[in-house]
Image 1 (cartoon, helix red, strand yellow):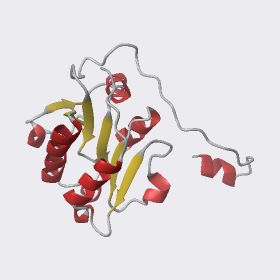
Image 2 (cartoon, rainbow, N blue to C red):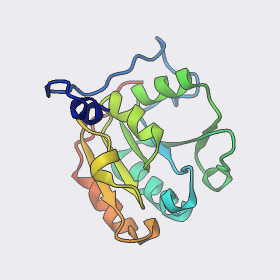
Image 3 (cartoon, one colour):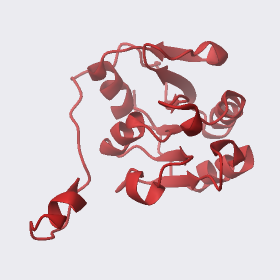
Image 4 (spheres, rainbow, N blue to C red):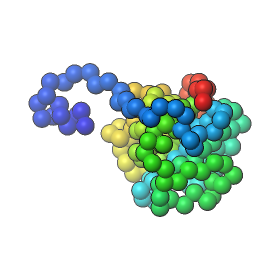
Length: 174
């Protein structure tokens, strides 16, 4: 948005990281211990990393970071593949913001929840298929952006695990 405004003649200035405010208190859907939010869906299949890879990534996050994976999705998203862990579907925006605010980590496709996590400064990996990560990547938060060289499924689980391993993850109190 800032780039468009600058294009129209507003003087170029430093743009701070976006910030959001979640309702006070712990999100009712939040686990009692530290957790990672995973958003495995996207608006179109070309922007959606395979479910079996998100499952493998969740196992890695749980084992290596000692965070409970929590999968989120919208009202039309099928989260049944992720039932080994907590799934939250069609939660109100305030609930999602509270969940993100207290998360220790975020992983997901190029979509709105990645930007919500970034606004709360949550370390993250974001997987990009056809979208241009230079334009659409969340910014000003610790992140690893994985841009596919072709279809999104060409991003390997090893590449995602290496990206998670490079990020500074601090367990947030729940």
